[in-house]
Image (tube, rainbow, N blue to C red; front, side, top):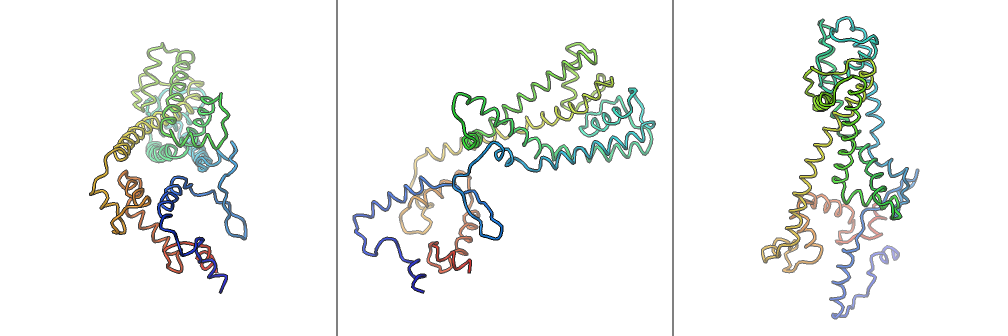
Length: 352
């Protein structure tokens, strides 16, 4: 019992010199300024989780943290193409249009054109069964494309993003932890740059392939690339050779998803710019008496550093009153003795 009481004793004696009040305020401000983010939690089997304030980030662990569902999406995509290829191969005689000598390539090509809603019209289902299959696979394909856009594409972009930052900072000694900090500081901007570069490579590769394999002139090749990437699919130009369709199976998927991802990041960048403008205005405008009254959470007539920080974060839209209420609820659950502070004693009581 005596040990428990000792855990609740303050580190400073009860008799405090009044002249030290200013020093306490300065110390509080310093605590807020050097406050750290939550440490990395390392779970040990059969024991309580331990923490690591300075995790050793390697390039391997860096990439493992980025969208682990990428493997699952790749599996879904492979299963979709395999199933679609088999189904459309079975009904190949019920699909009319420009065909090559390789029915397997034609089936995969038709499956990809259906999935991405490009729909050139060079292959068209004729029977009722073929039309039902096309309807089913177009909806499944659109759902899968949405899943790829939300997870798989982000994984690839962020992986290339880290490599881009390393290339830009070649002259500096860049640790994996520094890479993560740099990524977080300009995340959307780097994503736009990476996707734009990938999109440029896809456009050039598509034009070159159409010129040399499909024998189109430069303007028609550019026109076909644009029509395909935007999933317009007018049908006047398409991939008609066996090698062209084998190339198109991967290129159409990558180009349409990459273009969608690019516009998504542009919208995100615009939103982030608007939010940064709001933050700048909040931080630079003059504080009024009305602000002090709103920031005074405990109504004691003064605003301390913690209250001011919370008020500014709410004003910037970083947190809401509901967020604060949820955190305070968690604090009250941890504060076993209802003293208004957390100590080792509170955690020991919870553990027991």
